[in-house]
Length: 195
Image 1 (cartoon, rainbow, N blue to C red):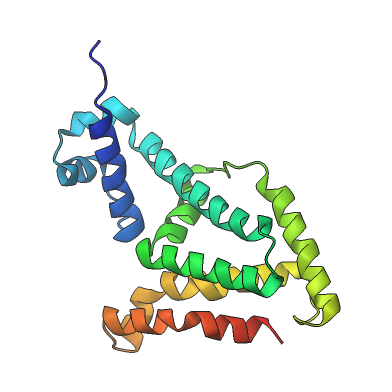
Image 2 (cartoon, rainbow, N blue to C red):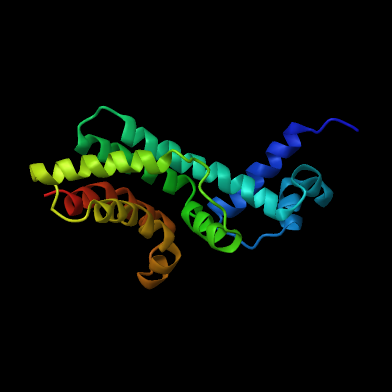
């Protein structure tokens, strides 16, 4: 049996990532991916056996990216506000690069019951929630269930990207103007979250 060409495999993954996470074409077929990668359709099946396995590979890598971002925040020794500022920077940069990542991940979790790939994340989240409680006790953030802080943080970062096609039409603005608006989000988010 001939050795697999890892260059072709990487090309297919990068093409799928672009189609799903950058362009938001979640219903793209293996034919679409192969055609855009410039390889025969059979290559997709050769390297990934099925569209679902290719989806799972892209999903797992996207989830690992999210996990790395979260871990960078949770494990740093920075003061809490600086951690959150860094987290916002990382997430916004990721959202600019891959605007449909969260849409893709949620869709695949619903449609294919994909699971988180990092089993340690819940433990690290508990540590973050404990730190949030401490900040609430110090009065730097409003008193509430710490999960609301985390949900608000993610929502304020990701929702404007998720809803970009809708908002661009509603407000009749082009992509460049909307991107400028998104780049202003960090200060807006910090004002909402901190007292």
